[in-house]
Amino acid sequence: MAESQNNPQKSKKHKVIHWNPELDDANQNKPAGITAYLGGAIGALIVVLFCVGAYFLFFYEEPVQPIAQQTAEQAAADNTRRAFESVSRAQGIKDITTRKLDAARQMPTTGNEVLTRMLINIEKEMADADDFMRRSSYAKAIDQYRRVDALIEEFTTEVENKQTARQLYDNFLVRSGELEIGKQLNEEAFSSAFDNASEGKAFLDTGSFTAALQRLQQATDDLDAVENSINEFIRSNAALGHRFISQGKSEEATEAFMRVLEVDPENEEALKQLERARISDRVYAALQAANASEEEGRLEEALASFEKAFSIDKGSAKAQSGVSRVKRKIAERDFTAYYQAAQTAIANARYEEAIDNYQAALGIFPNRSDIENAIEKARSEKRQNDIVTRITRAYNYEREYQWENARDLYQELVNMEPDLQEAKDGLLRTGRMIRSILRYKRLIEVAKTEAQRSEFQQAIRTFDEAMKSKPTYLALTEEGERLRNFLQLQSQPVPVQFISDGSTWVSVQGPTMRKPEKFDDMQISLLPGKYFVIGRKKGHQDVRFGLQIRGGVPQEPLTVICDTKTNF
Image (cartoon, rainbow, N blue to C red; front, top):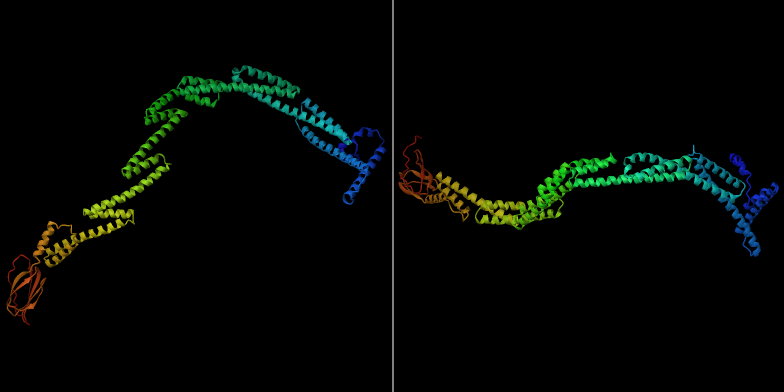
């Protein structure tokens, strides 16, 4: 066997294919020459059969042959095919088994006599299978390789069982130490675990790995039972502690969580709940007060109590949910109040108030699109209402001749609605009226000033212009009436007696103009106002003086004579 493995080329070179593997043992006793002769004959026969088959396949049209001749040829072909398939099957199984054996050789067996013996036995059986292959006993080789495959599977299972059992034993040592603190909760299972572990370790040491695995698995199950007992003890006492916390029983809750810590000193939940247990009486009192206030509808007081409970115990779900619930109730209450107030305001056309309440409601629930729509609608209605209200007020101001107030409202309307024709017309109308009144007042002041300067005729004309600008509804003031009466008096001519020498040219310049003329005595009617009287005579100095004529005031006779001669 070793020789064939060390020199594969030589083994392959001398390999003889036996086409009848079942006669292999009988052929071992035949002379070598006969065997070689038979082998050569069989090889020649195969070549001949191959050539004949190729000829018939490609060139020969199959003639009708006798049935006996066809049967013999078919039988020979079947024997050839079966021989080829036996070789292929045997080689395939050998390759698979060889790979599995290589993998088995890599498995850890050092120091274990049982596994070493198994592996040695596998190697021996494999050598026998290889020997069958070399002697072309393919059927026996196939059976032998299958036996080797089964032994490899058994060996692999044992190795895996050994590893698993060793791991279970190591885990047992760790877990048993961890669970010993709670062994009194299930002493029977804890004791059974050690018994099974001891038996499993004994089997492991003697190489009975399957039995060791079974015992150690049972020991693991026993520890699971102990752990379940501990977990149930923890769960039940934790539940009891939570119940006592909810009832405000600090002492009982503390004892329950202390029992948990006795079997699990590092239980984070128990340590956390132990702190809550010690203050549960104060939290319970605050929660009771909060619940009472909430039931009576005193929501702000309830909220304060819930927040107090939560400040004492941040882990109190009741306090936390109470804060959230009462805040929601307060929000819903306030929202309802704002919404109803807005609806009432809308019904009474108090749109600003409605909008303010809607916005307050939206501040509570910002995602309420219906409130946003209500605000937009209220603003639209307010706008229309403001327009109608302003137009009505502006008309009322016009009827009351409060033109400036009316103009201001029309200006607001134009700013709000630039295309509103009524507002534009009203703005023009009130503007014209205000300008007329301003012009009237200004002209009255001018006429008054002109009258004070004795420009009576100009004052009369100015006063007449003022009367044209004055709205018909506007009555003259007492001062205006006095001015009108005074100007009416100044509109009448005043007779003035002029005396001259018949040779002096006398002219009058003023509201009533008189061309130069000569006279001895003449009465001239002059409109009230300021005048200049001029007298001229050849060779004499001119006479010039001013004259003030006022209606209702008698005028003394005036003498106009040039009697001073000039030197040139």
